[in-house]
Image (cartoon, rainbow, N blue to C red):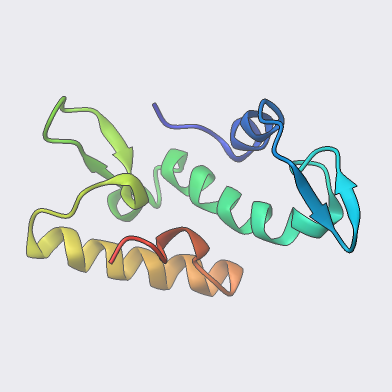
Length: 106
């Protein structure tokens, strides 16, 4: 299921991690100003997956169940998958300055 950036942010509110910044406990990662740049950058990827203009790069079909999934959650299976991911990373980097979401996928 594809989520919007606001749904992503709301999903973060359902967690209760034990997080401290500069010695002070953070009550809500989703609402803390310390995490807003990263959350906003990742949120762009959620909105791109819902945007028809970007869906050819931002989503892929999951072969297990045939569902449309976010490109950054998709397991690359072909050279075309890898090329689409590269182009998508470039798009996200142009928009946000960093595509944080893809860093652990390679």
